[in-house]
Amino acid sequence: MPDEQQRRPRRPQPMTPEQIEVHAESVDPAKASEIAHETARILVRTGRASDDPKLTATLVDLVAELGLSTVADLWSRQPAVSLPGALWRVYALREWIERDAAGASQDYFEGRIRADVPAAIAGSAEPPSPDAMRDLGHAILTGVYRGEFDTALERAAAFCEVVATGRVHRADLNDGRDEPAARTQTISASNLRATATDLRRAAASWRAGTLD
Image (tube, rainbow, N blue to C red; front, side):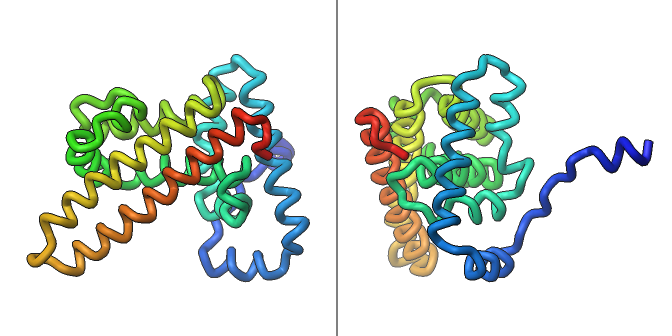
């Protein structure tokens, strides 16, 4: 038994933001970029070449296995229109949904009424309950490995657009009543729309065969 436990690989410990910063300063940027791109290529190539649902599930749950900070350390500093940059955005989006499914549900509920086309692209989530949000996030990320990669990115972008629209609406409701909340929601919506733009550009790059 002791020998077996020694041979068993240990799950990497999540890193704190402070540890990530210190670690990033000690790594050569060119080498870090090379590692980020190569790991992204391997994951996508391996996942899309396999029909094994267990492998797909493992890849979809990568953040739960490694920790968000570890995945961020690997991919988050890469350009938005790159394979690691696109993967980071989809994984981060799914992780936010998992952590705040109720908030995602509220934003999506308001947004889908006012952004019906992006809501249709993102996928069915009626009624947009917290569980439906989790299912939609899971389906979008699964599509990275089991469907058309660019379609998965477009769905993620559409989801961001719907949620951003919902947040803008809530910011308008808070305007003059809760200024700090309105300001936070407006900034968050702007960031989500920028993410949506990045994901659409990455999808176009994938279709052109230039996403690396």
